[in-house]
Length: 238
Image (cartoon, rainbow, N blue to C red; front, side, top):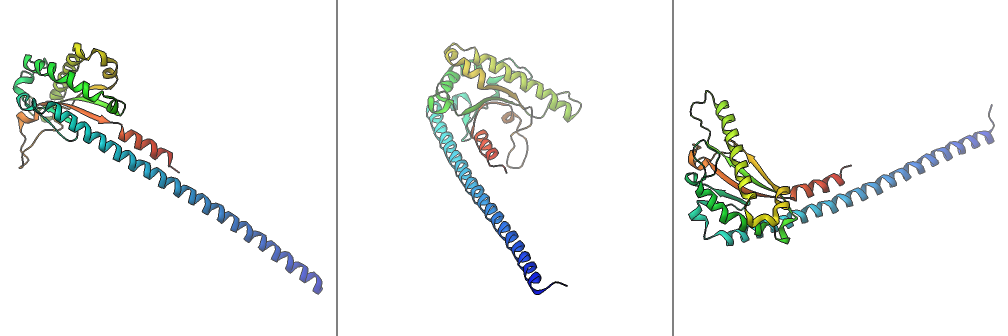
């Protein structure tokens, strides 16, 4: 049998063991809390950066819209064009763009581009804009119809081919304009041709497709805001 002294020693050993375990748990808890606090501070910091990026690019978009509006205010009506606040410069007058079913630019559209594009490039390549522009998209849009198509799917594919050919011919034309030769390297890195077929037709308030309005060419600026925000988010992933 254990004497009283042995029982006391065993009790002290058990108490010492539990004290050591509780100290270890307390230490681990402190480390966990410290890591959590650091992570929360980092998340808050990155959230502030995202907000700052969003504000910066909203200001950039607003100022670029104003500059384009001032530059082309006197021209858009006679060109049949309009400028949206999302930086889409849209040519709507189908009578001067292309012949029906054709991808070759009509002389009237060439004349418009001769005037429009060098001035457009001069604005978007200014130092306050050029490094923050991710892409300048030439978008081709069609109506959903195609005479003789056997199905809606066939019409969509035929219009896709046509819209792509039209944007490529537009890109080739503007890239060859002598006034933009000094910016050709930048343009070849940022200017793209995108045929969208009838994916984004224009409809009236009743949802009825407007064929003439749907057939259009757009120059659309995309900034690098999304890419920078994605980079920030990647850094805060646990």
